[in-house]
Image (cartoon, one colour):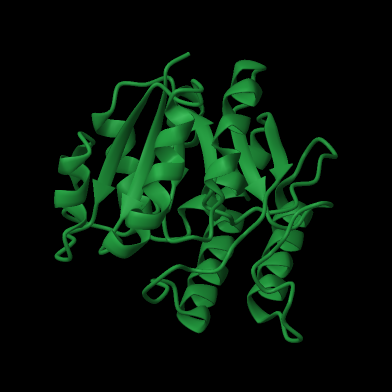
Length: 232
């Protein structure tokens, strides 16, 4: 199975300076077969960083995170894809955990911030607004769409891998952050094999999040409603 690591970036040069050595260290261990960066129009030297490290770059001209994933599916020849954001939230040491699960037949593999043994970036906070919201959306997705009794603990996290064949069957079309939620919901509905492992979500290294809480939450609500109507 050929697995491509897709690094999603938009002005992440300071984060890459820290994270890329950790990412590259996993390549020698066969965690993935190649690396492709998908860049949304960086102006801070991110693209130049990749070129200096011999990483191919796909220029994304439209859409957000979903657009980047759809571009990867269209342009990259691979059997499966691992998507990684180098901002510090996602643990590069987890990269080797995806291949064995994909080789064992998983359609979708999610690094869960919510299951036993995992750590969410808000776990040390008194008020865990993002975590609580994510868990609420996860409860709703499982309640409305799971068909085989399995429970997915982190339906939204973008640190995930999936096979090209599974993505084709799901007919994904979300262009923004809701693509992961849409993907999980549709995979639940089709009773695909979804596997999770516990991950440690760290703090962002630099810059600001591209997904402000309230507007993003409203988009997830719209996604949930659209998928519910689609499945009626």
